[in-house]
Image 1 (tube, rainbow over the protein chains, first blue to last red):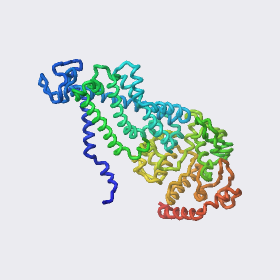
Image 2 (image 1 turned 30 degrees about the vertical axis):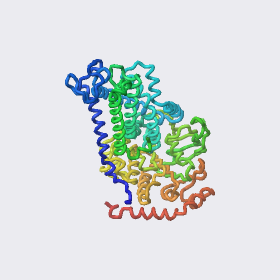
Image 3 (image 1 turned 135 degrees about the vertical axis):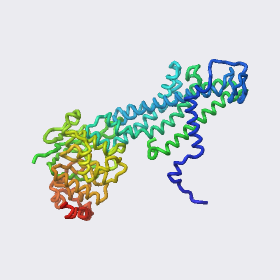
Length: 289
Length: 281
């Protein structure tokens, strides 16, 4: 048996084939989400009963090929998935950004203020984290008129607390550094100290955290869509496609299975990409997460 | 000579315990501390860990709020709760130098930005290239440092740069919290020589350390602190030679390497001293 050695730093930065594949999938997801609706033509309201429940790779009457089959009203599943990618992409990135921004404000505020303000804000965070986030999302979605904006906000509300906790920890740790104390002593304004001394410490850990949040939000968006609580009915979403295929699992497995597979691939790819990010940028920050 | 900085009957406690922070009892960190320092003099404060010596400095500069007692700068009481503009003279006149050279400069800023910001805060703002170079020259560094970040310097260099930042406001008092503890002995000698020069320029120092050997070299007066109280104050050489208090004697006895360390410092200093030829030029 040969002795095992740690890989050299350079080797650790090298991408494994699976990681390259994951990054390629993430890139594909972004490209399809941004440009997809301009490339394919899809009308969610159009039905074609002659083409209903066709399996994958069927050539339709109009000469096009339904790569992922068609659903119960004859709509092309592949086109729905491409259109749904935009919703997932927009909701995922916007929600993660809103959650991160709000979490930073609360976390830095708590860490800066200390004492009772910190205790108060962090107990709110603890209470929120005690509930499963999907439960909060379903609860809120039941009260709010479904729209793209409401889904974004609901999912942001479910994810900000984790960011706030990390931001508070980093803020508290940074405040103990001499350069922050030097800035306080020299009478710098609070905003300048936060901007110059504290925020630069947050970017990399929160960028890594955001990649994890992103995949959780995409999953949560699909879950809401599946439950019928997500985007409005005329906005195709991955969760909604799966829900529409649920009743046809026995005779048309592709309607639910193939979009589900797409979700799995996207979420796993984002997770792997986040891991690559962590390894590249995150030296010494893992302790904060 | 009148004191440039004085504290009178200073009391401060750290709150601990309690279900909600702030409700617990306080640990007394400063107990009726009265000390003063005159221009061009070095007041050394020595004591074991937890004796309150760092707390004293932090309270003077306003990092610890909720103290009782008076802090006087040039005879006037300082109000740390006042707006920064109202205590501008104190902020510029009293600067602090920290123990950890690695943490005392913002790692995200170049030295140029750090020093320019410090110069801009001085009573007579000026932040030209000449001023920056002059500042670096004062601490024995040159302009090549300006566009680098703190991670590119050694501990001794970082401490020099931290001193340069403190000097940007042309302070009359420098509060030093173990400024040489993290440095090796030859670098310590360099930094202490730098302090000696600043002292001759008429700046006052409060120099906190647990290392009596260092104080013996730089301090004019030594105050010994124990559990938040000043137990003995006296001229440096006399205090080390003939301590009046048992605690002081124990502290001195507990530094068996005092002489040895002093010799090391002296040796390093002799080695670093400019040769007569250099001094002439």
